[in-house]
Length: 304
Ligand SMILES: NC(=O)C1=CN([C@@H]2O[C@H](COP(=O)(O)OP(=O)(O)OC[C@H]3O[C@@H](n4cnc5c(N)ncnc54)[C@H](OP(=O)(O)O)[C@@H]3O)[C@@H](O)[C@H]2O)C=CC1
Ligand SMILES: CC(C)(CO)C(=O)C(=O)O
Image (cartoon, rainbow, N blue to C red; front, side, top):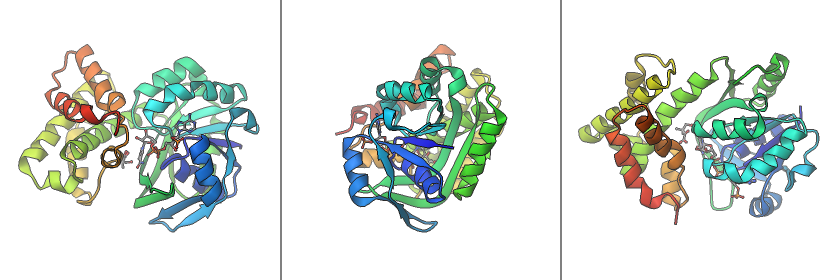
């Protein structure tokens, strides 16, 4: 199976790098700046699972992709629209798209532009970032990909993707309930990224503070209520289980949005909390804590 990674940053670079290191053909479709970085230094990963580096097969135009079967999409939400022409070319060449982004709204755009049959559902759990030299730094042990069909997709194809990812030695789950998994992550990430970014501190600071902790519970509850209004079948104890997960996490655990804020980078605020505000309005659900998060982060959403 020929794989293209579009968005070779902290997420795409990590998972694509692992698959490539396991001996599978992976091309990294990058823009000029990342091309120079990866060409000069190689794709280097500093990981709690062991450091590794590869010489990535870099391309800068989709026409260079060799019979692509699968595109692993690791872009930020705000870059997706700009990448639609590249994705269209890759789909025309026969590829299916596997997005690993946080969020949900991008699935509408991708399926409308590329055809539902060409888009899989996916998400990942990983704590990784790029350092100033562009190396990937992975700071906790999670490295999990969950994916599955949004509509009917050839089962043998899905199983081959699963098998390749297993060989690449990260955790992979192929599921028939990918929308529920995406929403499960969405409840978690919007609450976790919202609170850590607004407080500008890792989760431990929030958990130790009763007022901030109560705000966090309200925030999770609002997102869960929206998921129910969308008829997504999440477990009834979702709020409690997200709270428990965060209470049990390392006090230093923080979100990619908080790290982006610290680096002065743009934030995926509109596709996460902004999208929830739209849904809340649509379903007439009161969302005071989401509004507070959105307002507090709004001045910083374009980055420095
Ligand atoms: N980092 C993390 O810990 C986690 C992140 N996520 C989610 O994963 C997604 C990706 O995040 P992350 O990997 O951190 O982001 P990064 O910013 O590290 O990587 C995104 C990459 O996309 C590239 N890019 C943007 N537009 C294009 C384009 N048109 N063609 C080619 N490359 C392009 C950027 O390259 P360039 O240098 O050219 O701008 C950059 O390297 C986000 O939705 C995030 O929320 C999910 C779980 C954990
Ligand atoms: C919470 C976490 C680290 C899990 O993958 C994440 O998705 C993010 O910070 O963007």
